[in-house]
Length: 458
Image 1 (cartoon, one colour):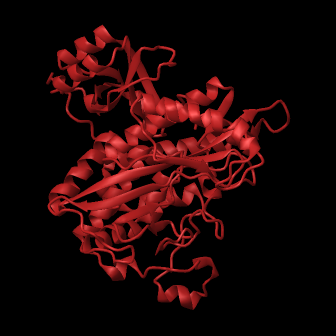
Image 2 (tube, helix red, strand yellow):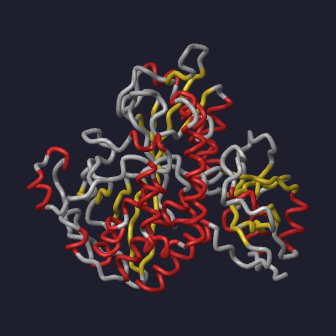
Image 3 (cartoon, one colour):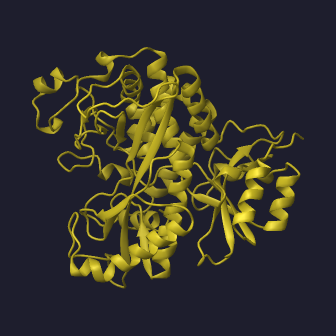
C-alpha cells in the first residue's frame, strides 16, 4: 500500500507549541454529521510517522445521521481516513479529553489513493482547477447564525433564551441571559485560534450571529465546523441547546448560514474598486454559472424539507425568485459591492459545507468554461422581485423560481448532468440516494417530531 506524505514539520511545530494527550480525528459525512475517532497521541503519532491512514468500513459513509443504512452502503471494503495536518487545532481547555486537539480528515480508498466520494477532497480539487484554469482563488467567510434554546417540560420542548429581543439590541434580558454565554463562547473560540469579527443579536428570539473571518475555503469550512462545535459545547455546559436549524421555533424568524465568497486574481494584486463598480468578467462568468445551476445547487445548500420554510418572499431571507442584486436581501445571490464579494443566501446550517461550496464552485467553473456573459447572469435587480410585475421581472431576466421543496431540488440535481459531471458522479449519485432515503425516514415523523429530531442534531 502507498504511504501518505504527511507534513511532519507542521506536526512537530504544533506539538512544540501545544500539549495534547488525545487527538479527535474528524470528518463530515454526506448528511453533514461530524464523525470522530479519538486517538491517544502516541498511537496517532505512530500512524502519521509511518505514513498510514485509519481504516473505517466503507459502508459507514452511506449511513444516515442515526446509522440507518441506505442504498449507498457498500458492505465490502473500507475507506481510509487521512488526517490533514494543516487543520490541527487545540481543543478548548474545558474539553472532556483535555489536553486534546482536533484535526479534520480526507478520505482515501483501499490503495491509499484519494477517494472520489470525498466531499472535502472534491472541493479542494475544484479550487485547484479554478486557480490553474482561470488564475482565480476564493476567499470564504461565514456568518454563523445560531439560536439558543432552553429546554422545557411543557408541550413545546424548547423556549428561546431571550425574548425581549430584536435585531441589534442588548436589552436587560439579553445582557443577563445571553451576553455571559456569548462572552464564554468568544473567549473559548479565541483560545483555540478562532478570532471572530463581531457578534450581534439577530431578529429572532434567542438568535445571534457570530461572524467568522474570511479564509481559504477549506480552512474556512474547517473553522466553521470547529466554531459550531465550541458554540454547542459551551452552551450545553450552561444547560442551553444551541441549534443551527433554519427555523427552530414555529413561526419564528429564520436562521441562515450565509457564505460570503470573493473571487480574487492569482496574478494581479487586488484592485481598488468602488462599491458601485460593475462586476468583472470573471465575476460575470462565475456567477452566471452558479445562477444557471442554482435549482440543483439548492439540493446541497438547502438540504432538508425544513430548509424550505426560508424560501419565502418579503422576509429578508432570499425570496423565491432566481436572480441577483447588489445589496438586495430578497435575492438568493447578493452582490455585496464592488470588491468582488458575493453572498450565497440560499444556504443553511443543515448543509455539508464542503458539498455546498463544491457545488457552487463547480457551477461557477462551468460558467467560466462556457464563456457565460451578462445575458446569462441577467441584470442587477435593485427591487424586491416579489413586488415587481411580470413585465418588470422580464426586463431583469427574472423568469425562474427557486425550488420550494427538497424533492424539487433533488429532482433538479438528478436532471442536471452538467453539474453532476463538474462535481463528480460518485458524490452526486451517493448524495441523491442518501437524501431520498433520509426524506422517507423523516416524512414518517410528525412535523413536531421531525423538528425536534433535527434540532437535536444540528
